Length: 170
Image (cartoon, rainbow, N blue to C red; front, side, top):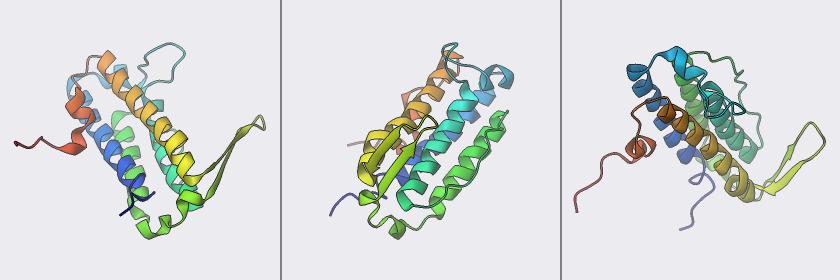
């Protein structure tokens, strides 16, 4: 049995967005919200709120591009941890609303990403997912995690991989 484009995308995004949602619970319990939402790793990097927004955009846009549909509009207006959790919830709800059967043939779908300067990329769906969508998504998820760690939130690798649950005894 082959590993489908659906299995390589939708559940991956949903699991990590769920993890990211849980990080906010931990952060809210440990640190003042005002310090976190605008925190950044470096002056020229986007803050925590933007990392969550861009992870959300990466996931929902990837699913929409793979299916050839328009993604739901989510303006980047979140200014609190609770609003960032809502953003995760909305993104997860969109991804989970898509019928896995709709991904049939998505690996061969022509995907173009055009930039305002007229440049861009062209991929097949499989190449887009593997070479851009997943790396871009994980870049923003990892950056959000790193910002929280740098701000003193007691996240660890088990939080990053929370979707796995506790390990089994062998």
